[in-house]
Image (tube, rainbow, N blue to C red; front, side):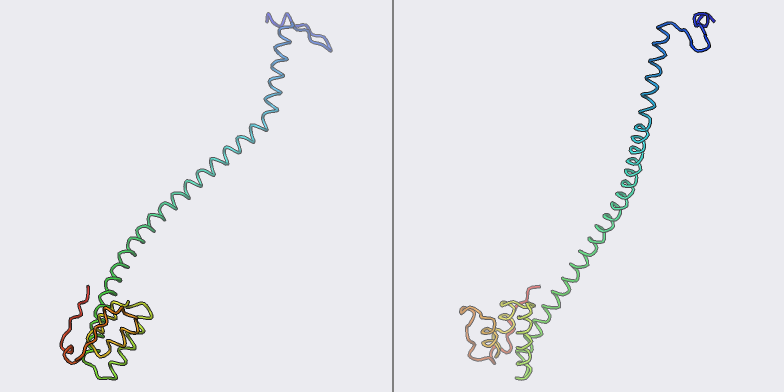
Length: 177
């Protein structure tokens, strides 16, 4: 009530103390600033909200990828083990094939020996066998010279066997397993 006594009203004007007027002006100025800042603040709030949602979405996606990576690592480990097992089996079969081809070169008739030599050449050409494999398979057989020449074996491997029949019963070819 005391403050209302100090304010005088007129039809067109209100009289107030200078302090009160300055205070009111400051409140008005600050209110205007806040009102001007409101759209900017709303924009910033919307951006922060978008970033938050985006972060949550990326976090969810990241967890999904982490699960997928874990699954893929497990699958890869299984496939590595399976591949090793298959390679071991394949190597075993190749060793058996080498023994079998050697037996054919030792005991087969001429037609069988010719066909076997051609098969050995094909395996060599397709890099199933290397030079040492061919040398080991054919050493001491009637096809030794032909196969040594085919793989261009060094001279120190080319000891000619004079009597192939003596070598017939020898199976000195050791296969590495």
